[in-house]
Length: 227
Image 1 (tube, rainbow, N blue to C red):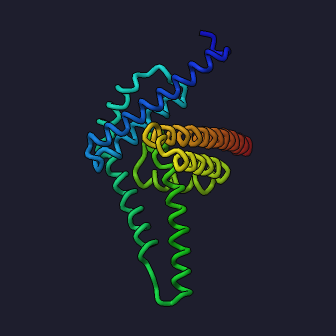
Image 2 (tube, helix red, strand yellow):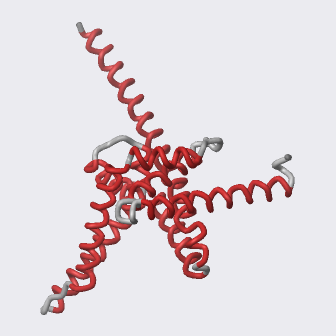
Image 3 (cartoon, helix red, strand yellow):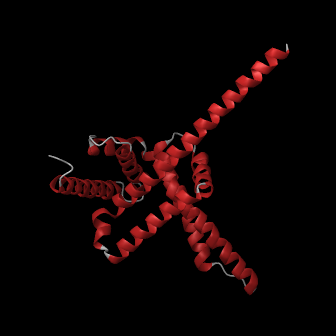
């Protein structure tokens, strides 16, 4: 079928919708399989892994097989990082709701501080799972790098935040879509934007390494010429 024709484009759109529906179904199913508490982490990591492959252009994969293999492989590790995220989020939420001081000035100051920390937590969380599926690293480095990228790549962070708020408006306006592809569409959009961000960072790092190598070679030549 000619993909340039309107029929071909409509067919591709239908395939994309079905793909999102199916991945969302797998995400919900495997989350329930782990009794939610043990299933949310590995199923979310598996979902991001699927969309990472999709963003990288690997569209002919067996989605179910990849999802199940990732779920099993990352079960313990992904649960650990998800529980850490959950505990931090619960602590921030509790402080925002119940923390109060008698001194009005200090109370406003600490409320503002907690709101700022919560915002940093949120933007860090956006990068956390994409980093987890894209790189092999320690938990400490995942959290550190997620926060650093969010801060030092402000334009890309604004892009992904705008996308998340747009999706939030969509879910609020049409709640039925949350059950159909709320998780899958959100993770696909986040993975797409963050993957481009990672690629740009890697490209800049490669240029910097080449520049450093060139400078080192020039320095060595000067040292040899002095001798």
